Length: 331
Image: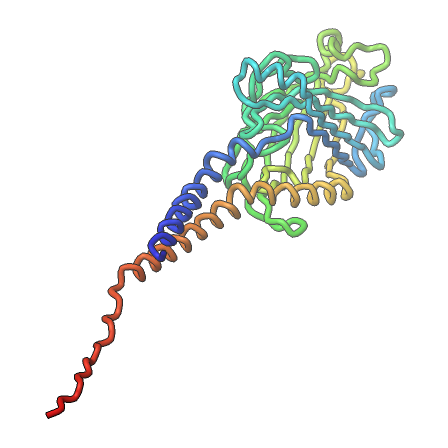
């Protein structure tokens, strides 16, 4: 019986030992994926910012500029692209909507971002765009990969329509989480005007061609990333935009369109942190808790199997000696 039990324990030890790497290296890439129907909204604010008044073409300080970023998964578009891509993809239709202190629109820029559901690597397909212009992204945008590493990544800037390194700057504590801090600087770059702007009687798509006035932009982008899920728990951008040259500025060399430190609003930070804390448990189950737990269980079962096998092979004690009693001899 001991030997039979040891064989059963050995079989279980092999099973759990084999299951450990399978969960980490086989199941994790196939199960840890961004849901195609994800919807998310974030509100960022720049207080005491500089903003242009397009009616007078003068810059002024305003109490607050608000940026509303919405992200919506397009399930139908993802299914169509998956047919040719041969892998699970996610299609995000996003909108960055900027409004002034009076609640009126300053600009809005839509995007379509197509990427691998697990790795977040961009997938190039018809429909990939920024503000209606086709683009071909290099690197990541919005979200970092699962199990983010302490290294630099290529990050796509939607206004400059180009990618640049975003640098790992260290590990910090944020709302009880150990997060990786990343920073990217986009130097002054000439960019396209948003197609939707409150310019009275002027088509922004032909503005530079008709007036010679160009739009320039620079930013320092900051992210605090949960390394398990790759999700930003906080974001900040120090932005500057200027109009330069041409006839639109009335002889002036440049005019500030916007300048401000754009930070995520506190209530959205709290919501994002709570959501990330829940999702990181699911990722850790596949990458740490279950693989290490099964490996430990396999080692314990193996030790028990070997112990029972050794007990079954130990020679048994010799039977007690039998003393023969002889009948007395009667003479």
